[in-house]
Image 1 (cartoon, rainbow, N blue to C red):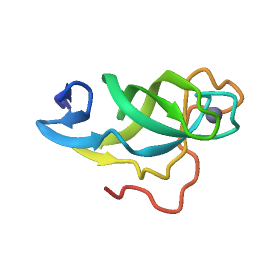
Image 2: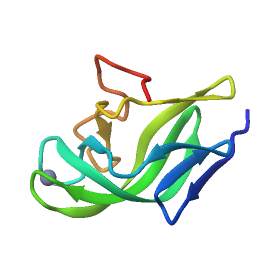
Image 3: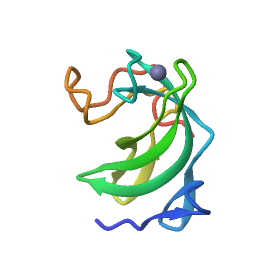
Length: 116
Ligand SMILES: [Zn+2]
């Protein structure tokens, strides 16, 4: 199953199959982006996107609005590809940076998955 993944508009959007699906200016809970247990990571740009199995991950830069640390993290999950269709994660879904070795790389429980 092949999907077309691209970064558009100087890193402002992640395009999946030529549709803009994930945008900057979202606030994501991220584990491992900074010293906060869970940062409130304000996404300012995307520098990379790739699919690993069914999980679409991005490399993103931004700022933790809790502690002010500006950093680049990734890959962070933004959604999954199931039968050729992209299902974005809720912005409230906790994303785990790969350096956060105290957590397993998986989706943490969330009350609202899959919304736009
Ligand atoms: Zn922080």
